[in-house]
Image (cartoon, rainbow, N blue to C red; front, side, top):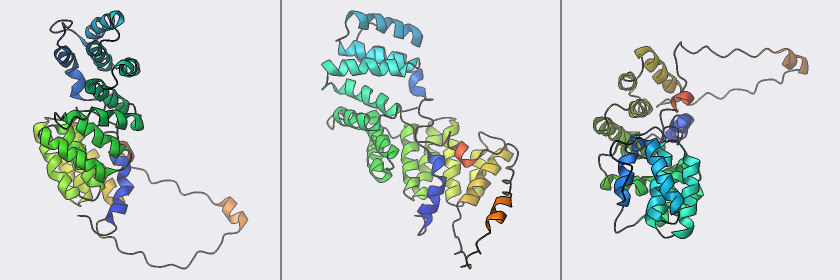
Length: 301
């Protein structure tokens, strides 16, 4: 656990844990064309078809029979696979009118709404989609992410822990649970999860950068530099870790009380030139930018 008051200082690097920044880059899209044909038990566009061909195929089927839930589901998934998320959302919105209790429709619709930061909509749909008798780790994990996006990390942990039981080797769930732990002050619990995510997920730069941040939060700066250097030059990795080191101090000494400074005359204020900001090391990525890779994923990678 962090020392008393450390959580507040850890929140200074909350930009590094900004939600959603890496959610749309994952391996889920790469496998969607195979999943969609299998999920609906309908003839698909054929083996080896590109996502664009799949979207064309299901689009024609949807035009002929827009009330078929399986066709709508496949069409939405194929649209999402080619980046047409707003069109996919429209398809799922229409499908939900006719199939409001369909868990598959609600699940896909809820996860896409979460992806598009429609949090309240996503929460209702994901709750309706979550089947306790036949749980789906993707739905359970997405419910955790919806809570994490609201800053409710402790509540999110309960869902991520449930998802881990269902899918113990899913890198996105390991990553998200780890970062939720970090945000409530349990970086020591986050570290082994991120190391496990790196082991089972192959070479994913997001996991390496998250691990570097979590190690930095514990004061393990040498280890953090090694982790960060897997996906950056040693110089940039060291600069990033040193940046976090300056923002978060494990044993801060209380600042001495100082007498208030005398008020400056209006002319002195007007003539005062601001001190230029210190120049960052060449190649340094500020922590806020680092957050583009350090994130809780909306959807599985």
